[in-house]
Image (tube, rainbow, N blue to C red):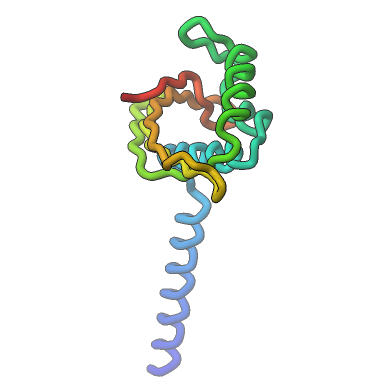
Length: 143
């Protein structure tokens, strides 16, 4: 009877281990988009224009701006905000299919010697799932 209990406990432990492993390996669309957002903020903080642009669809076209136009805008913007540290305050993600959207609120804190107060900005992101994962297809400044 004791050996049967040990075998059952071992089987139960293996099943629980497999369930935890599957949960770790399976990334939902929502989790992938959240990681994209967090990676983007980390790359902005690092001043990594190419890293940020790697998260944008190469076919980006929004409000008259293409991929290269967005790159130039980002280069100019990073020169103005490099003394800030940006952090994600809150976000909401909608994923109805291969297209998604996210609203993010970002807190930007100035460096220790800056005389400007922290500021919060909201951003609307259009997203699309492609072969290599999720990419930004639209960027709009929120209200």
